[in-house]
Length: 508
Image (cartoon, rainbow, N blue to C red; front, side, top):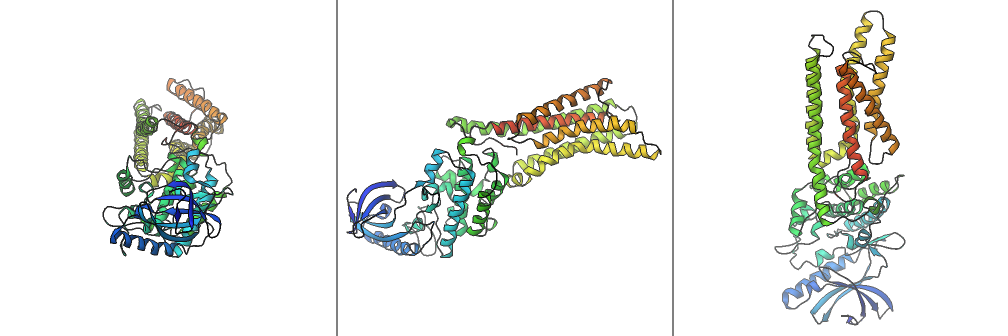
């Protein structure tokens, strides 16, 4: 088609791209002597009454879309139809935008979080203007967004997917045999044939998820697999896919990807405000290249996430078993040698707390929305819960001591203060661990692990070199639990910091 004249006016110069609906060409407007972009809708080429009707409806719908005038929307200059070698073909004439598609940006892998937020906000502003005019895009995806050299974006093909649907009717998007949109980015209700304005927000959520993590929220071998995933699967938490994705991004993306449109943001303007706040966030924003330093093989991207996901429950069960074993051991040994039932009650309490914690962890793990909301509280809640048995015993001992009318300060300054500092410091360090924690803090944690294990060994052997409060088995059990908690967070956060491919779990 190179050199062909469309509409007796537009000379095709070179093909810029090709998609499911047709081809995009750089062309010369011989009337106004300027360069333009021409989208040839070859999907609607052909003859017959049905083809004539489809092309007429396309031109009618395209005229509505051409009314959009927005800085982030590619302007439509003209439309028409022309006889070609493939038959009569409708075409759109648009401004020629020099820039790079988001699909190319993704392949380069140099997208910063601030850039993703700024581009997303501009896309939302374009969507908001279109929605205000009663126009849905229906096909938001990386290849339909161009980034100009000055960093601003232009959204392509507003309403073209709807207009080019040869099976569309007046009151329904599509009939049997044709899907409008691109399956990897398609909202559940759009997959069912009933899109609405918030379907565009869902597609934007898929696009932003891909920009900040380097992969789509769902992985599937074909279109049917993608549609099934959008309809039935919950998306992963973004920070569990790529390291250093802030929790604010987790909340925004998971809200955009809700199955029920009513649970998403109310409008594109609301999303734009949230994204501009993220764009202005004063924090280091690593690029996809930094998060993914090398491209793993396809087998690695499939097997690594599965191994990491499978290891999570086993680690949790192992920690629970260790806590139960320690509680049962100290209860049986009865380290304080006083038959008052406190040993059994305390041991049962520790086992109950550990079991409850394991149950909650397993429940949260299977629900991405819960995980995103509880990630930060759980990070501090677990160390606090581990410390609670020691705090309870300490308070009881202080009350008993005070009831005698004479407080033994020497005892509390040695056994009380020293053991509290040792236990508390390890738990504080465990709570502070993230994928960004440096070697210095981790070294302090290793030192505190050694001190706590030495104290436990001394309590068990009867030769205490760090004095514990009585009964000694309580701080011993807390120390072992603190060591287990620290080691678990050390492993998970270090793994997150060295992630080389999508799908690895991250503990923030």
